Length: 193
Length: 404
Image (cartoon, chains in turn green, orange):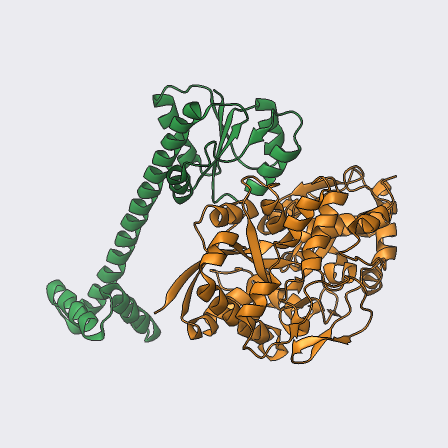
């Protein structure tokens, strides 16, 4: 079974490809949705095309599926329209799949399930990465605000942090927001570090 | 109790009524909290609606008909009780290509018939078969482009190459030379003009002066099962539409739409189509185009069944669906004036008495029968003067010459 993954994000496609290879599929190709990708896809004659639901190139792909004479006529995203749980899971995970007509659903379902799992894993990874980035960014801002307080008011690091925290609590704000406000004010007053 | 509704949209000017309903409190006033889901392709918008990930969608009217007829992936009965706007599209072509056309852009836009013939002549002068971007096979844009090209004897399936791409990718595709022009909803044509990549060749409003465009689409069954929510949403949209139509609000509306959660383009580009001040060529002054896009006046949102049938007639004309009475009835049934009347019964909006009309017959503003309020229909002519009588689809289709 030849599987083509259309994806712009190299990482997500790799995560998916690795999963498929582990599961024993070995005829896998990754095509980025740029330039003449439709012509490339036609030459490859895939059995299954997997694509990120959020990709703006889906309309282009579907048009090709409609007019192409080179391809055996592929059918809808989902082989088994009655399997609503599967369809819901795929849409939630952001997977769209096009399957060539005549391929049995028992053969396609494991591929789809795997794609859903891998897409979800990828989103989780992205979210964690984003969280880590934000945490690092916040810590830098708080550190800068602390050193302003330490310099201007001769506080210890601990006291500077305690002051930021109590101000945040009193104003019902996040510490990072109070720290950012302090940095801005300090910059405006020309007392920045 | 607040009802939460998820509605999918594409970043386009004509999502305005949905955005205003949310941002200006019209939805809240009806006890609704709108979650507007930004989507980048019509395929994904369709799938989210058909498979129930959203409750409603800002949908191309022809796509709503096509999904109902089973022409676009999974067949599903779609119901459209409300039009989110009329007009608003623009055909732009690379400036080099446009050199072969009438140089005075205002004159060019004012006379689509002459422009179509100039375009036909320009095809042979161009270095390749012109590649024209359309947003979807089942879009008003594609149907109007085909109609316009064919009027000058151009076969849209043979003499040009129609390439499908979503509106948000049109400008980049122009820049990369992948397409020679495109027809799309605003602000994307204006964005290409502003970037100096293209100039206006035709506007939707001049091809069909009151052209059906986006609809509010539901899964038919969901709409039937939630009449109270549907009525509240339609009332909120009717108020939002009146707000959007008011010239005093155009600047605020453009600002609102330019936000990253909605269109994410500069407000001054968005404002051009809203206020009907079209810049057709970079660096030139705007051309006044007062009916460029409408939201409320002339009962714009009313889903005339005859307009769904016009779409059907064009799908038949271009061999996208075989002509049969069952399909015609299904297509006409996508538009739901009955739901519109029920929902807006107690609102101060003009209410047409009929559900169908002859399309393309109104030359100048015309007062017509209304169950309430004054209703004046604006001019709705097609540029070639043809008239669509929904009772006589066969005669209408027979009137078009077969491709050369």
